[in-house]
Length: 121
Image (cartoon, rainbow, N blue to C red):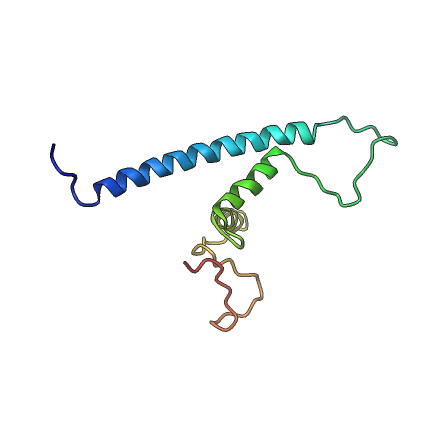
């Protein structure tokens, strides 16, 4: 048997780990979708009879899945979903895309003292 090239075992182990992690994530997100269906079943709105939550909280299974998916990355501030939002927001506003994590609020002063870069990795 020939010896493995340096780093080969680590790559195979990493790939196996990634496949297992991806499979678990898919299973968790499937369960979250199923949970939403059971815990928050759709009901017909009947004017004058159906309750209206004072918080105005309206969400669907996709919202709950996105919430759990982002928490599995353990990005407590910004991460891939923020990057996606920034890209889509800039496109919708007709703005050129900014580097990830550098969405600037209009009117916000520029410069290192005032810059907010959320994703310095």
